[in-house]
Length: 127
Image (cartoon, helix red, strand yellow):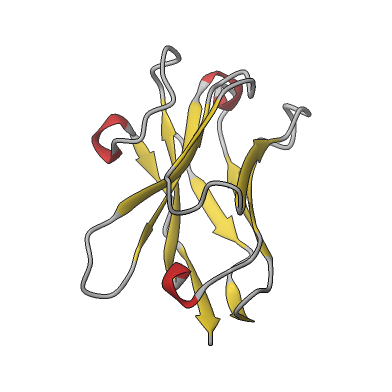
């Protein structure tokens, strides 16, 4: 069983930055691909970014390319994945979720690929 806990959300003005963190329990975290998704009110959950188990490959939604960066701690004891968000826009307002995929062959943009989910952290960007 894996537990994921997100933090780092908050209220920020447009153009500002936030860094989200997701801490995972479980000894096998380093073998999981990780993803970030978000869900705005009245909208479907959508893909934001994903990173392979090794940290060497990433995938981003077109809407966040060049503004967001996903990374994961090299220290396996920290079991943490990050989402650095720069140049935030009001359209980025949503609840952000991290997710873990036990299939090490992919870093998927599809929510159905992920086996474990966190509870989410709210990000609000004011104009």
